Image (cartoon, rainbow, N blue to C red):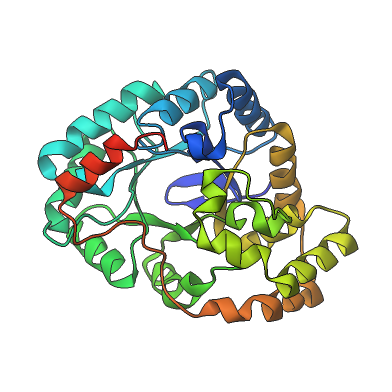
Length: 322
């Protein structure tokens, strides 16, 4: 396993995503199977796992908490829902995540998305800074923040800095490397990639067999892009690995940490292979040319920021676990 820096932590160049542990939209996986899968990854050198309080409203965090018991070097990253990011709520949300995860301190605590336009960023980030001083969280990250939001949030902090920004990034969503990556590098922050396989389309999946794939436009775009899929397949055949391994290894080659959902041992095997794979220049060029049209656009937005936060959280609660 290869490693990189994420703030003060030494983490594997690829991480496990635990969204599927909490969401019915992927189809149910048993608690025991998920824990076994995660531990298989830990035992093979993967020491970064990402979850969030809204993934099944605590189910994912509880499963991750069970999986990391007995391990001392796992960097657990979780997130506070953007609609809860208010000074009066943050401390309670952190303590809830700590209890579900079974941890004394959260290594990386991320703001899942920017709060609504009616809310101020700085009061919330100052609370996060206090929580670092108290030892309840160890570092601060954000997710789905665009360039201006990231800079504004970073400027809110006095003694800490934002160490990461987790955004959608893949061969079919390359805009962040153009509009966001330069500023993250300037501030010494790491980009973390969610959706690195476009719900499996970049791994060759074309069948719409769950709600997650049905509702994701990136999945539909990628599964119909024969040129891109052909390029990935060509490289995969040259190297003797899966298409998923190639798509993940390409992200790693950019110095970006992909967070990949894993429900079975074979998914972990692809992550391990990707971490070990060094793509050659002609292979990188082929993938670049096949995906360059996806450099346009901006950061994927996952919330309607004009909606009041309390209403947005209420809607999320009503459809919890979907």
